[in-house]
Amino acid sequence: MKHTEANLPSIPYAPRSIQKGVPLKHLLDREAVDCLARNVSLVYPQFDSLSFRQFALTGLDSLGLKERGRHIALALHQYLPDSYEKAIGILLASLTPPQTESDEVGLAGFFYLPHSCFIAEYGCDPIYNGGIDPFKTSMYAQYELTTRFTAEFSIRPFLIQQLDRTLSELIGWTTDPNPHVRRLCSEGTRPRLPWGVRIPTLVANPAPVLPILEVLKDDGSLYVRRSVANHLGDIAKDHSELVFQICERWLNGANSELKWLIRHAIRHPAKRGNETALQLRAAAK
Image (cartoon, rainbow, N blue to C red):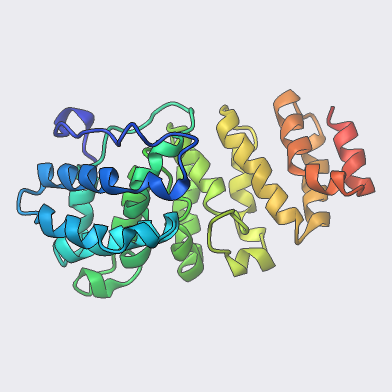
């Protein structure tokens, strides 16, 4: 089912004007909509790009970044095939080549926020796929998306609605050769992810995701290990003693990279003067 870079059409890259210092909502503006319309038209000639642009641009100026992503996703839904699987196939074919290194994608990746919103909005419910379960299609789409932008936001409805099924898929991705995919396994499951919808089940009980963190704590990429540290920091807000126990266990035989992860994970309780956190950070130097 995966396509290769060799058989991709020549897709224009996201607008170069998407850079740090630009107000965030302008990361999805007229230029981005034009680029998206052009990319989709290249792989789906029947696409009514003019009507799509009119729909997507109507009322866009008054919206913030996240609202713009959802609004453009709605426009895509109006002008792509009714079948979710067919629509996702078109969107995936229109993606630029994947990022294979551990460098962060950066703000330019927000060009793909509408794609993320499309999966989150229409990828959980069989009603948008002719009654056929779209789970596998959505997981594949998020695998591909996370190598261009991130799927940490679009994966969350699946964790909320189908926790065990989604975690089972993510466990398999923890050994993927692409660091962006491995990072998604930790970042997408953070219970209190900034900008993301909270996952109440994992806020109350983080145990189901701990096996993912165990695998990734020794990941070869700092990009991934930083996510594990931030994930533990999230858990510590509700279950500090659990995090302290995990860190104490990980300290046994820890190398310098894992010691850094431990210090980073408990930095916030340490700043508040928590004695256990301070002792653990001192032991992890």
